[in-house]
Structures are given as C-alpha cells and as structure tokens.
Image (tube, rainbow, N blue to C red; front, side):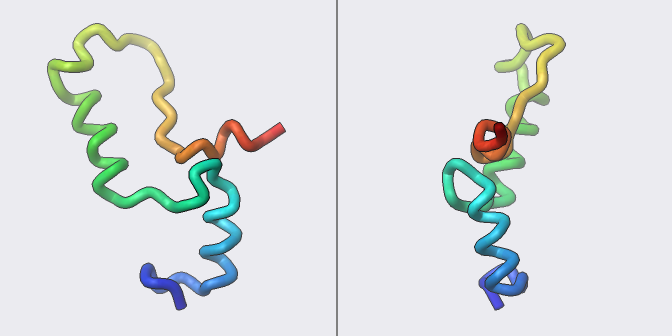
Length: 60
C-alpha cells in the first residue's frame, strides 16, 4: 500500500497520468480554490482553471 492507502500499482498508474509525475496534495487543490474565492481573482471571468498537475497536456 502507498502512504495514501491506495494499492502501489494504482498509485503508479495515476501518477503516470500527470506531467508532474506526482499526485496533488490536498493543500495544493485548496490553494487554487482559495485563490478563486479571494479578491486576487476579482478580474478572472469565464475561464476553466485546470488544477490537474498537467494531466490534460499529456493527452493527445
């Protein structure tokens, strides 16, 4: 088992899907949500913000 409790083989498969070759920490995902909820994102409109560790760029 991996540190997250997932089987090692599954962890390797999921990790391999990401360009960064790792899975996000919950804090990293939370920071993206906090940014969108903050005044710092007041000029952000109508866009998809991908927080996927590059998984979407590895697809052809």
